[in-house]
Length: 120
Image (cartoon, rainbow, N blue to C red):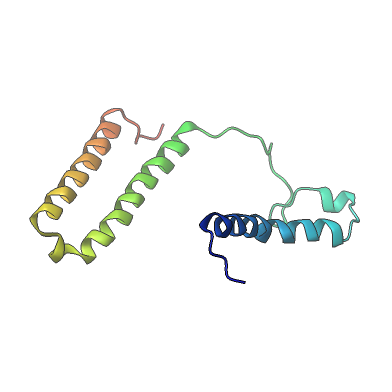
């Protein structure tokens, strides 16, 4: 049987997309062994005894460094395809990348000026 209706094909694809990850999860719940115990329910930290509260708070500077890292990581991610087609992009592509890098440098200068990169 050949599916010719586009909506029917989309519906079949949507059902399969839902069943593919849900099937193993449901099967493991139905077929898996259930024998919980105190040791199995305890938190595991690489074989070491837990140290401190698991809901401890982190300083906001950790998040700021992580966000700045992600920004520059995404910048590198966007620069790789441009470097591949550097000759085909021409002057227009070069100017667009210069504007992109200028905006990122402006954001970095703003973070620097706000002292977001200083550790206290």
